[in-house]
Length: 84
Image (cartoon, rainbow, N blue to C red; front, side, top):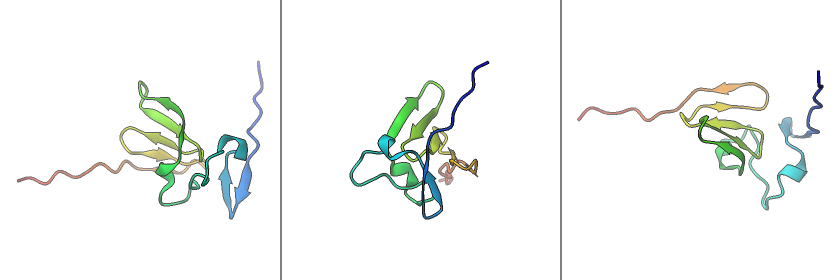
């Protein structure tokens, strides 16, 4: 059985981020607890499975739901159709 080692992480103002080597963008990507967290760069995209991993360790799903690095779930925010 193989063992996995966790990624080295950095903490900025109480927010865990992926190692800086994964976020080499200037300016750096928004943190996972920022309101604009979805603006981070995509590290791994799996459209066939409906999810993408962002540079700030947030997993976004095609239904607009999110999974934050600490395990918090953000429910999907689908637009509400207004009957005409």
